[in-house]
Image 1 (cartoon, rainbow, N blue to C red):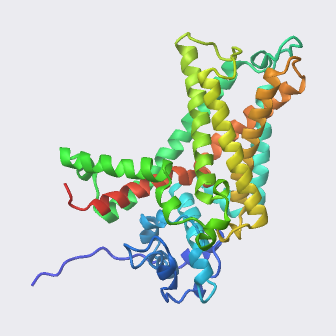
Image 2 (image 1 turned 180 degrees about the vertical axis):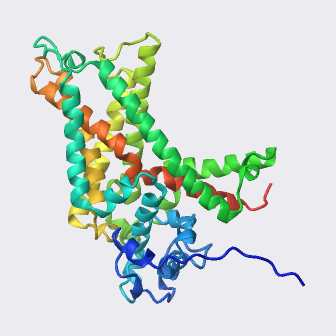
Image 3 (image 1 turned 30 degrees about the vertical axis):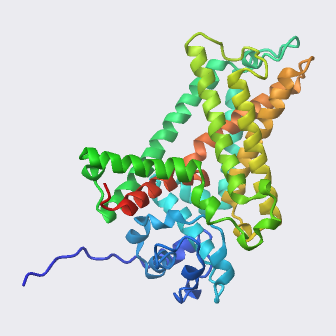
Length: 398
C-alpha cells in the first residue's frame, strides 16, 4: 500500500488579528453553529458557505483563504448578521476578508495602506488630487471669455498623455493582481491553461463561464437581484428605484458608460470625424451616451451615500473610510462632469467653468489611478472568481 503525499497546510498565526485591521469584528465570537449558512440566500448549493471562509480566518489558513472563490460570491446583504446568535457579524467578516484579499493580491502594498491606515489614506488622496490639479494648471493657457474653451485652458494633449500613463499603471497593477488571484484559485481548483483553452469543448465551457461571470452576474446583477436584495422581507416597502441591486447596477453601468463615451470620443478624433472639444448638440450619440451614463452614476452614488449616512439597511450599518472614499470620488467626478456640461451650454461662458473642469480632470485621474488599490478593485476580482465558480458548476457537462 502506497501512501499519498499531500501538501502541508501552512498556518499563519497572525491572520486573525490582521483581518481585524481591515474592519472585521471579533472573529472569536463565531462558534461555527451554522446559522449563517441556514439564513444565507446563496447557500442552497453549498452547505459550508459562508462558514468555511470564516473557519479559514479563525484557523490562520491564509493560503486557503486567498484561494477561495467562494469569498467573492457574497454580496453583503447582511442577512447572516441579523440572525447570528453570537453577534459575530459574518457579513462584516466577509467584507473585511475581501479587503484583506485585495491588499494581499497587490504587490505594491498601496492597497494595504488605503484600507488599514485611514488618516494616511485620506491625506494621500487629497494630496494626489492636488498634485494632478497643480500639474495640469502648470501648463494652463488663457481663459477665453467668448466661449468655454476648456482645451485652451488645459491642453488636450496633456490630459490625454497623462491619462495614457495612468491607464498603463492601472493595467499593470490590475493584471498583476488578477494573475496572482487566478493562479491561487486555479491551483486550488485544478484549473490550468488546458482546462480553459485545451480543446474546443474547453473553450465552450470557458465561454459559458465568462458569460455567466461578466454578462449575467457583473452586468446583469442576477443573483444580487434575485437572491440578495437587502431587507427582502420588507421588499414591497422599498420603492423599485431605491432597491440595492438597481442602485448598484446603475452605478456600475454609469461608470462603464462614461469610460465608453470617453473612449469613443477619442476614437472619433483619431478617425478625423470629430475633434476633441468640438461643440456638439446634446443628442449627438457620444454626448447622449455620456449624459445618460452620468445620470446613472450620479443617481447611484447619491443614493448609496445617503443610505450609508442613514445606515438605511443592514448591509450598510457599518462603513469604512474606503467605502466613503470610493463613493466620494465617484460622486465628485459625476457632479463636476454635469456642472461642466451645464457650463458648456450656457449662452454666456462662466469663468468658474474652467475651475470646475480642472477639478473634474484631477479627480477623474485620481479615481482611475487608485482603482486597483481601493474598493473599486472588487469590480475586477469578483468576475474572475465567478468565472471559476461557473467552471466548477458546469462540471463535466458538454
